[in-house]
Image 1 (tube, rainbow, N blue to C red):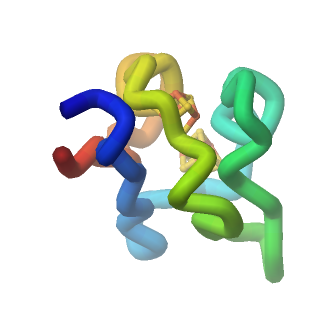
Image 2 (tube, rainbow, N blue to C red):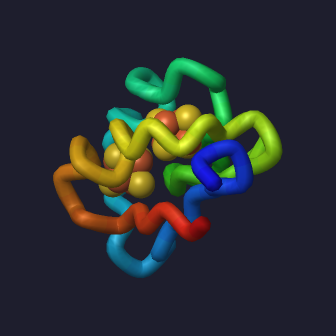
Amino acid sequence: MADKAYPIVDSKKCTGCGTCISICPMEVFILEKNKAKVKKPKECIGCRACESQCPAQAIKIVE
Ligand code: SF4
Ligand code: SF4
């Protein structure tokens, strides 16, 4: 179910570009120490915008 989806960030791959923070409609991510961090996983609606737009392919959506 999409409403149980949430993102996982591979911090080794994340470059801290901020794309996921800008693009997520639910403000799931924050930037912390120049890495994306999943702050509000329960807010994720599973749209996969972050997963498809991350230039480092650092985000995976788990359902
Ligand atoms: S879009 Fe990808 S590389 Fe950029 S901050 Fe988010 S997780 Fe990191
Ligand atoms: S799948 Fe959509 S709602 Fe969920 S974290 Fe990514 S951009 Fe945000």
